[in-house]
Amino acid sequence: MLIVLPPSETKTHGGSGKPLDFHHLSFPSLTKARQTILADLQALEVDEALKVLGISEKLRPEAESNRALETSPTMPAIFRYSGVLYDALDAATLPEKALERLAIGSALFGVIHATDPIPHYRLSGGTKLPTKSGELPTMKARWGTSISEALIDVNQLVIDLRSGTYQQLGRVKDAVTVRVESVMEDGSRKVVSHFNKHYKGELARVLALSEKEAHNAEDVMSIAQAAGLVVEENPNHKETLTLVV
Image (cartoon, rainbow, N blue to C red):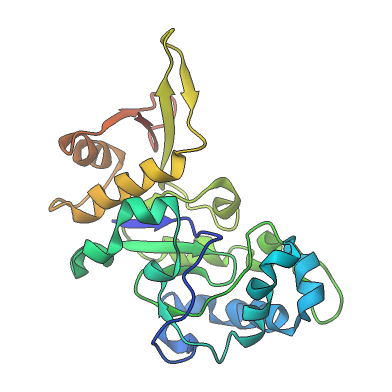
């Protein structure tokens, strides 16, 4: 199984790895699109980047980091991304076998393996990044069907934990997806928004550490339930599971 995580806006700065080498990234079919997007992102002057990226002056260093994408140090992607989901995942304590099951969606790189070395960058899935000719395509238009095709080619069950914005960059037919819901006092259900990432991080950790391999949604549910998580199947859509918290 391949567990695809969402990226995070917050990222760890620095790194001790050599500068970005596209040939050291997984999913090589995405190389051309990656190079084009990176070139357009890196070409933005900082003041223009603040507007394009929709960030404030306080985050100027984020825009400045995009000017050095090919020269700044790298670190494994799983440690580059930070925030609620990645805190719950606690990748530093995962063995190599567990890390091999993890991938991450990205507006800049499409999808990458957890151990792929990447630089610090700022680019979200909802950004309209100008091309050198002045056009403003969406990230979805830039990626087309390439992310979907790359994930289909892994020939194993994809567990897609990406947020909606990143799923739209490349949906995967028959991938298992997960909703996070809480039970209210009156028994009704409410979709969890604030802590959604935390619970998905916990689920990703359980799945990555599993001694069993998952081949379908039922297997995913079984592994999660064995770890004490409350997971339900959706009778109307067998690939969609509900994590109840």
